[in-house]
Image (tube, rainbow, N blue to C red):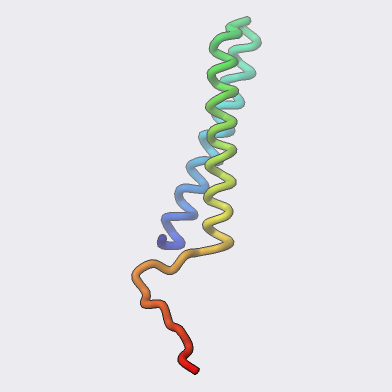
Length: 72
């Protein structure tokens, strides 16, 4: 994947995780436990996506390149 796509997806996941956590806190203030639970699950999902994008950023895969094997 392109480095810019990975950065954009990582930034998007970070923003969505922060928004989910903020909405979770707001839902708890209004005593909407079910909404807080949903937002907590979505925040965990975004945290998982952040880990995936960080891994892809640190270990990029090169697609569509021929594999070179040394002939001895």
